[in-house]
Amino acid sequence: MLEAIFRTPPLTALGVLLLLSSLLNLCSGDVGDFSPCLNYFHRAWPLKGLQGTPICQRFDNRYHFATLYSRDRRTPLFSAYIYNPPQGKRPKGNWKYEPQLANSKADGNMVPFPIPPAKVDQNVVESQAVQEDYINSSYTRGHLNPSQHHTDPTDRYATFTLTNVVPQKAGSNDGPWAKLESSVSQRLQAYCLGEAHVVTGIIPYEKDRWLKDKGRVAIPEYLWSAYCCQNFSQNLPKSLIDTFPSYAAIGRNDPNSTEEIVPVNPKRKKAFLGYDVRPMPLPTLETYLKQRYGTPISVFYEQCSGS
Ligand SMILES: *[C@@H]1O[C@H](CO)[C@@H](O)[C@H](O)[C@H]1NC(C)=O
Ligand SMILES: *[C@@H]1O[C@H](CO)[C@@H](O)[C@H](O)[C@H]1NC(C)=O
Ligand SMILES: *[C@@H]1O[C@H](CO)[C@@H](O)[C@H](O)[C@H]1NC(C)=O
Image 1 (cartoon, helix red, strand yellow):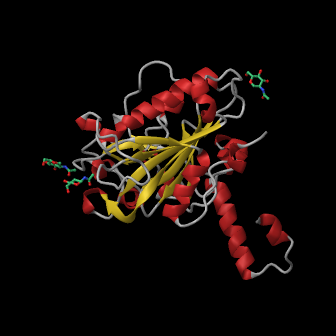
Image 2: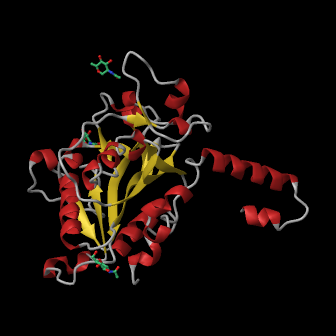
Image 3: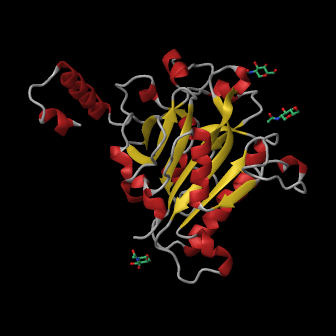
């Protein structure tokens, strides 16, 4: 954009405004721009087709992953990261928020919520989800980028930001979705030889539903996840031939949803009944995303084909 402005003599008022706003963006750096964290996307090519606020997720002055945040839903639309094998126990959640969503002068590092009775600033409450939104809601805080897909303790710790979290039923979060996360983890450890880029996102209801009917934090009807690993073992077991270089899945977050996208296994344990996850090829996922979002969506560059 800068280039375009400099090529246009004379500098119009609009041009000056655009220039100023892009300079401001450069200064705050972390909101509105994926350029400092393109490495979390396969071929440095962020998912195409969704509108939102890009967040380069920063903690301890380092980037850890990338999120496209919806200010209207006060949830992420997706998080993108590089998979690394987990080590040690799951860290304890110390939930964080992102001051830069409320104040563009903030340095872009996420910070822990204050310990009650201390309260977070009202501007923060307006700009994003806070702890109170989830309390008594019957939904858990479901990570899109899970801490268990990382080796580095700081990478893991950084996943505990509410901008990486959506309202997820415990039946999904502790059941089939957890199983998906661990089977992907085992498979990538065993057969992915290079980098595995993962993108995990949500599919909204056709008509939005909100935590505690407050119109603040929107509930997703489904979660989806996909990975791209182009350098993989040539000795894949037959059963896994279709899971490289790319793989995708959609998981139910509502037992009452119809079964067109993800059928229900009626024999599942009661706690997990209706929270099934359906594996599928990447193009099938993109078809469902297009249907619900009403616009073409490309998760990976050239659908993770070729090299
Ligand atoms: C949660 O529910 C309890 C018991 O009904 C109530 O005392 C508490 O104020 C509620 N907290 C929030 C944040 O809604
Ligand atoms: C794939 O990964 C292996 C193991 O890390 C490495 O030796 C090889 O060079 C990689 N191949 C490509 C094409 O990147
Ligand atoms: C599913 O429907 C039942 C019965 O109408 C209702 O009690 C329950 O809250 C619904 N579940 C969700 C997640 O909306």
